[in-house]
Image (tube, rainbow, N blue to C red):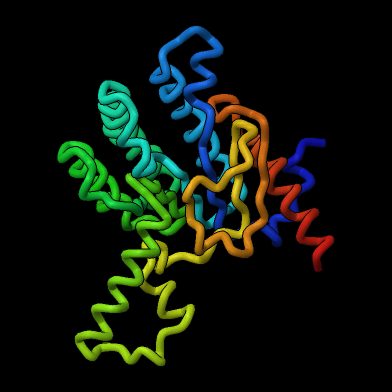
Amino acid sequence: MGYKDQIDLTKLPQHIAIIMDGNGRWAKGKGKLRIFGHHNGVISVRDIVEGSVELGVKYLTLYTFSTENWNRPKLEVMAIMELLVSTIDKEINTFMENNVRLNAIGDLAMLPPKCYVELSRAIKTTSVNTGLVLTLALSYSSRKEIVNAAKQIAAKVCKGELKMEDIDEEVFENNLYTHDMPNPELLIRTSGEFRISNYLLWQIAYAELYFTPKLWPDFRREDLFEAILDYQKESAVLA
């Protein structure tokens, strides 16, 4: 019996967040350049998205590119941006066929113009879809997100639009990038690292954390199913 057959579809996590780690190490292990790992990581993304649709997961958020990643070698960053543009262009039809709505969070203004335009086009095209919401965390920093939320709230107080005594967790969450989606119930990180890496720090306060030694290009839907099954077992213990 496979992991999928053991999953209780009535108790799926609504929102799964993933730190896709290990592309570079995977490529290095094969004597290839890092970008080779990123290209193969796209195959994993496609399989995980399809697996999420297959189960009926409502929200999937992928840590695609952090603000710290801008400090990587220029050629690698350029290659990643080109890969992002070409992948989005190729996958739009698949998104439409699978009723997937594309979304993005982060400091998107930092993206190269070509990348931003292609991303915006895909988001607009898939906005009519009502199935899985696939969110790409791009040029993303959770600390920066939290600081920006604090600035927005402070500005509203200064303008008289909000009273300081009315600021609570709900008000704060409404000023985060993720204000229109539930908080993740399951966070998965590949590659064997046990770090959160500045990812959705506020949102994962009560999420189950799942770490796997598999490098991202080797992670497939069966691994996703295993993580969800582990989540359900842990939830049952805590219930």
